Length: 504
Image 1 (cartoon, rainbow, N blue to C red):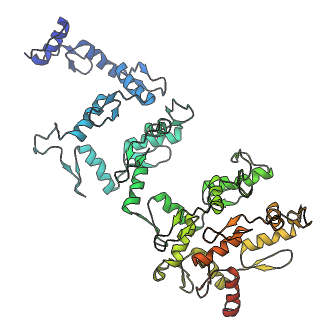
Image 2 (image 1 turned 120 degrees about the vertical axis):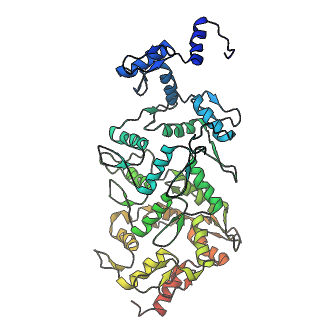
Image 3 (image 1 turned 180 degrees about the horizontal axis):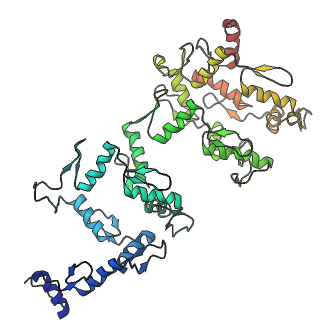
């Protein structure tokens, strides 16, 4: 009939049944017929619920050995089928064929015989077109709010059955997908394993079409593309500041809410981010304070990163890198409007707010007098003129306007601040080693902090910072009452005493 050749007569006999329509092997349970006896035997397993082929990784069972072989590729990561046009790999031949149809051809082999329109099913709410009816029905739940798949443990509901199946693993603790490279990580979802394996392989399959930068995850690429388009979709409802990702917006909102969800298990101090808590924990590690059970383990000493120029130590390597720019003169952040350069990105941001910011659109407004400020810290200081917030020392009754100033003052009443570091040259004593180091420069003549513009040198970084303002014109101190800026804190304090003595 078709001219196809076979090496065995049995295979030819089976093939001829395709043309004749003969199906001599019938299932006694459901009456279904088959052209081959082995197909009938495989089918009969479905009635017995027997699944003799078990995966030795996750325990899942299968009717057929072939199905088990395909499933094992989930754990091994094997992808034997490669697209000849784009080089992408697939674990199953059917997925390769589907990929080739949708990405490299216009072929649409399945079409409706009733409406003569190929795979066009339209959403009645938004007009979106789908190739399959079930895809459209699933999409409609976005508009209707229907969530038919409910978790029996926590009663949470979902739009898709597949999402519910993944969710259930939270309650069971099931993580069937294990990394066979490091054997340390297990995942509840296959996608999680695939993303993790890219750490070992170095694979970055998602490329930016603008700058060709590559990423391990599609979500990271989507966020990156927004840096080219300028799109900031997530808006703060308090100050209208916009962000690239919902995670960045969530972190920002902590400024307004004051929420600090990460608490130190030793002293119970709260932090906005886990990284801040980890850095804080090094203080307790060095002092040897007893940690409660379950406290985070810190396997490094406090401030393990030392500057080779001046000996100053830091708890984080990134802080050391920023500090070293003082000695090298590196100022990598340049203002696009006036050309001034800065050591830190935060310094550049502050400069742009103060000198190139439209004062007509202030973001931080006082709720009592409607006065606006360009920095939240200035607003906090201003609020004290209404609340008369005072911090009193419990030992000497001295009063401070800020809690931080009171905390520093309290050290004068404790033994920890008594002089214990003595200068070998003049016998003067200091409460902290860093103060002694600074003092010894008086005797040695050392001035490690040099101005990158006029080359003038200073013994202390604070003195260099003040000096740099003569070049940059920066005035970081703002009067909380009249909004006037000053280069020195002493100038602002004098201004407050003289001009606003009767205020508040």
